[in-house]
Length: 95
Ligand SMILES: NC(=O)c1ccc[n+]([C@@H]2O[C@H](COP(=O)([O-])OP(=O)(O)OC[C@H]3O[C@@H](n4cnc5c(N)ncnc54)[C@H](OP(=O)(O)O)[C@@H]3O)[C@@H](O)[C@H]2O)c1
Image 1 (cartoon, protein in one colour):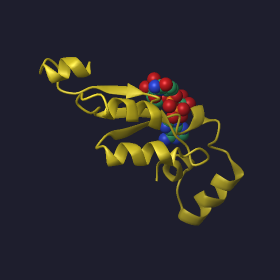
Image 2 (cartoon, rainbow, N blue to C red):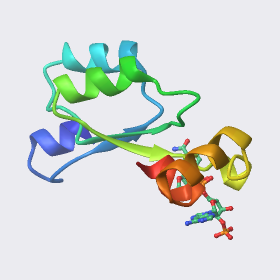
Image 3 (cartoon, rainbow, N blue to C red):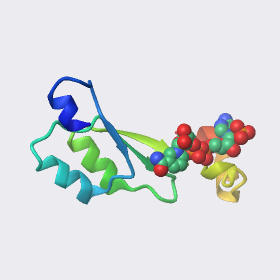
């Protein structure tokens, strides 16, 4: 896809689940940079190294499993935050 982007056949390309090592390989490959990297992210698992690497290279991070398929929405700590900030679990997680 990045080679097609180089030939101006596609405008942008994205991947999912790329770690820092994958991003570094791409960076050194003399190809255009990715536009987006979709990764799993939650307050309990923040992947800050990947997020920072994306930021430094102009790649947008797109999140999946933020709600962990709704399994975390009743988490007791999240409920405390709901009361403190007057929001729903989904709103707290998004923030
Ligand atoms: N690249 C990858 O490896 C990868 C892996 C997983 C997912 N994805 C993609 O990521 C996208 C998101 O999927 P996901 O699995 O990450 O979903 P998710 O964040 O786990 O969220 C979906 C769950 O959250 C609930 N929900 C959504 N909004 C809510 C709200 N405001 N209040 C309460 N509950 C709410 C939904 O309930 P309802 O069912 O009632 O709507 C559903 O059960 C999809 O397009 C998926 O294909 C990509």
